[in-house]
Length: 256
Image (tube, rainbow, N blue to C red):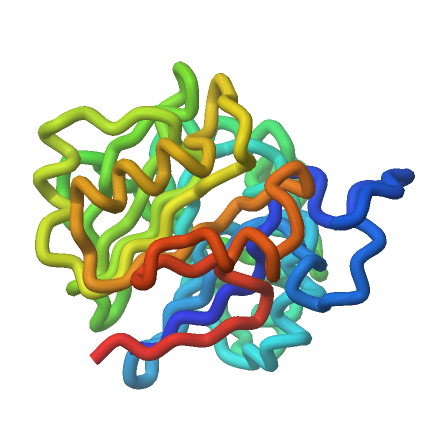
């Protein structure tokens, strides 16, 4: 299984518009972060988790010319704002794209993209989509990829992380109950959000993310959904435990 980090930034991305901090003006490409998303490729199946406002740019950069599905963690704009660009895949395959989401996310998508789902607006050229419902307490399958939802909280908003075999991706979390933590045992790779060093109301900060990684003990962990307030990639990396890295855009890893 190959996992590519399409984006590793927070909702504003990095650099932030108008900001002149040392991170935002850094010449290190690892400090440039599009909105958070990954692509999972297994055998002949390609699945994107979250399609934010940088979705088109991310797919072009990673050369993802085949896409089987998009799986959504939650309904915030930085995770759903690129859905219209699935049209390109519709044109290639002559088929609708499957999306997987909870009822809450689907309600938001219908509001944001009313022209996709309202029969009154159907015309050639709009995105063609098949919605598949996620029950947050049940596994589901995208072709040959079995996915286990992980229920987390983004302050008070329910968000889903996803486990595939010995890999798990969790973004936009600030709290995970013990029952859900039990689903995170014996991981080879855990990807976890760590917004910044200072405490935040709806995201793990660096200290909290590292504490959870130490508790769960994956063989390897990557930090994502990074703000410019975290500090420069090269400097923060020096302070991390041996099995923890800050992910960066277009990083690809293989899980065997």
